[in-house]
Length: 441
Image 1: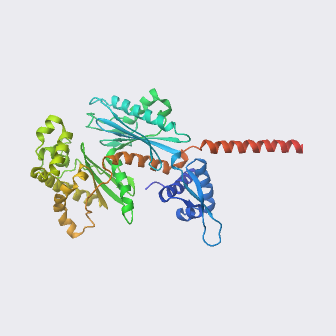
Image 2: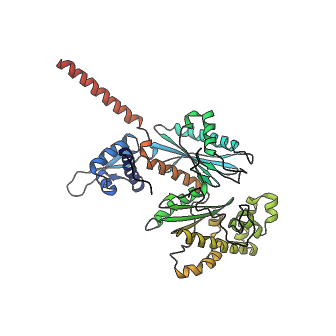
Image 3: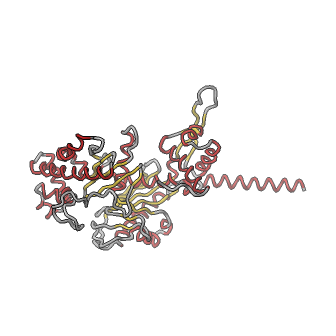
């Protein structure tokens, strides 16, 4: 839990966030309704909502009847177009870029191929900076909109607590150790587009962002928000994430909730991480393709082609492919048992091809989980496929950015129209005072 606010400015930021988030999550409310829902005193709330209106984050939205003989109440609502955020999903071959407002409505989309050499992060940083520059130009062209910053979704562990900015470790790009990717991207922006270099840049693991997005997608279908969600996905690799009380939890080194190198067989084959029998060796793309009989295709055309062939074989009911998924489901079930025993997760969600191929994994999963679930199905939730597919990480990046803005509305400057009105009022007051003084003299 965050520490209690230490001063009046921090208390004000917290209260601004409380009021704005309630409007964002629950829709239009009158000031009285908002006061009752947030526990903020009506007088304080009046000043807070005036501040949010000045910043362009809240607007008045008409009148609703007050019940009885009272006067109609003026409604307040989120003004989602005031703030735009950037999101970039980084993969080995392309960058997916989106500009969206606080309602998640896209204002700009692009998919940009890149060819960056293995082992050198600087070309990737340049490609990301170029993508941000193009998307930033689209955002800055929207009249009256404030560009908050960007969230970069990156495969591999991310340490957000590094002293020189968030660092990433990625075997996908052949990096030998942690890379200060945030600092490299900022340096490229400073060289080519200084106006964007000072904006917030957040680097977050893509599976963590996907977990956050899938968590939010679950909420309308649950009577109460789950306290925790464990997310396990496989596509170019095996990863996952952990969401606690609606927030991503990364642990001390950015790897909390990462199941890929969880040992599921102590006498299993050796893994590049130094352990044996890791989950990735059984449900990763290479392992699954080979077990299903597509080792030759993988060697000749790559893992993506082999996975496409595996999907077609599953749809056709080919026995070797179905058997491979049965075995993978049992191994995945062992990982689910470990995750739920350690974390007591309320929900387990599968992503990537684990979601796509859930019907063929389910038999093995059920076989592995049935003994524990017979004792108490509450202790081991049945894994469910995610609903967002390949868009989960990008959706999570936009959700992460939105949460950051809602957490600190004071970071959004006063809107130009409000500033102009304030200046005109001050000018008028000053002129009136001068005339009065002259007359009295």
